[in-house]
Length: 181
Image (tube, rainbow, N blue to C red; front, side, top):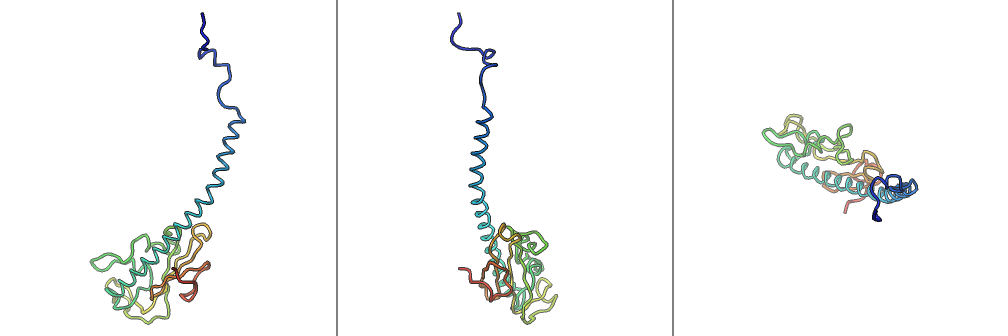
């Protein structure tokens, strides 16, 4: 006598698995969920990159203050490379990832950083500081997103007074933008 159970061999020709319509519905649902989630993830990435950019500007400000107090004779470094140059027998003033985040270098969290010459007066000439660079009475640092709208929306600026400013366009000098709060 046979019981009401079917064997595997008898089931092989029967209905089992998913239909094409069921698979298409699952794929459509996954697509809808992805379409909803991706913009939020991109906004979160931009926000994280901007927070890192602000942190890098603060690191630059602290490094400049340390450079002026210990190495530059009261003057500030005139480039990222100068802050990234180790003191004789010591460490650099900024970490290597920030020192290498200049335009054409390796961006740091979607931002490139530059310290530009200003109208400052030379304090120490090349080779006179503790790391063999020069120093001036003023500096202006900028942090620009590598791909505006994708890696960051805000541009940042910092000068010798230590105030970080932000704007939606590139900052030409510290009078541009609004103070970061």
